[in-house]
Image (cartoon, rainbow, N blue to C red):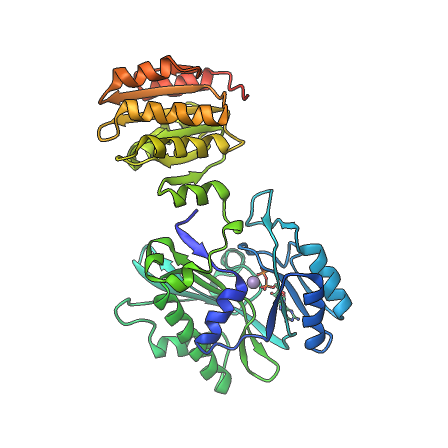
Length: 392
Ligand code: GDP
Ligand code: MN
């Protein structure tokens, strides 16, 4: 989770089109028959593209140029209902519920253009390269001089001269360069108007006739700004997201899935970060970052623990609660509630301090849970690294 909502290619392209950026004619298909029909409508040829929240679809077999409606139907049939694994997904991949069928483009040259937030400049930056189709990481590694950047002054926006300069450095001239500058300017307005953390077009192409067309489209919208974009909120596709992260976000719990096997329940983001460091240092790799928040109720703690226990990677749980506003007895009741609800058996190592500590410990000690109490975080981490980690 990077704090942003991703859009599908077809959704982003609709927005591109609203801003005057040329896109190929396209149709979203949810069945092989719909895909065949769309290919037929484009003269019996087209390109079929899996709609998933991940890049690298081309290399992963999620994009194909097809030469007949039958070909389109077969390729769509193989994708629809399957999971696509790309270098940007985990091993489970992401479900393909729809494909985008597009009219074939006449590609003369492929370019890369993206706008993203740059931490060093504390503002947006445009990144472009004439080596389209390739990932920007690849270009950065093999041919860094080919990368064009323009820093945006947030109060001014991307200036017309900057758009023209980028178009020229991408090798465009004449009417193509003028159209290219317009497209780049529109991409920046899309980025700014929609509170994006990323707008990426790879490839942006020049056609045989010199037209500029966005052949791919990526838009990530800042989660924190979604409250003022009800139209964008409706485009959310939860099936594409990490299910546990999505559940946590619904309940206002700060949760990030990690690779280890120790589920972590902590209150306070700083304490959660410190907990991850100490657990890692003790060789007990965390399965997640989780900050249940200061004012959590029993139910919210139970939801948080439920999310932790739903993660199949989790074979032990570390609780590190500093009971200030969140009282230890409230946390303890929430923990027991979640364990009982899921009939979970993963052992817990608990370090609690603060308000109603005695009551909190009492509730856990009298439960059927396998609890080890420790006084310090260091002891807790040591207890974790020696605990068997048997999962029930
Ligand atoms: P990605 O791999 O997820 O970035 O998917 P893209 O949408 O960028 O498609 C991958 C590649 O398929 C592009 O770089 C193009 O080379 C190719 N492609 C996409 N659309 C067309 C098209 O209309 N015609 C042709 N010939 N190739 C296309
Ligand atoms: Mn692409």
